Image (cartoon, rainbow, N blue to C red):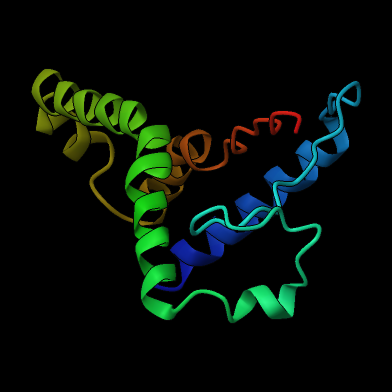
Length: 136
């Protein structure tokens, strides 16, 4: 399982990426313009500032603080609702479905692992939500 789980995650992610590239229809009406401004304090716009000069502009501590601020505000803001939904769903499954159901039908063995992998696939292979950046 230690080897198979990462391999299965890798191959399902690759399959999801290929599927999205082949079947997805990107919205080409508004091109996505990357935000090149300084993520630490917005000191430059990223266009008129050379990257090698700006790389030395902020110290390591400032970059760590900016990364943690991003992780606990933007990233957590995107994940919090789904985290709560998963927590409530797992609690409901734990309370409403008896343990004997799992032990009876998924007692062990290779077939049980394949069934659990098939049940896990929709949850792990969803493509990430992409938001276009606002115009400058």
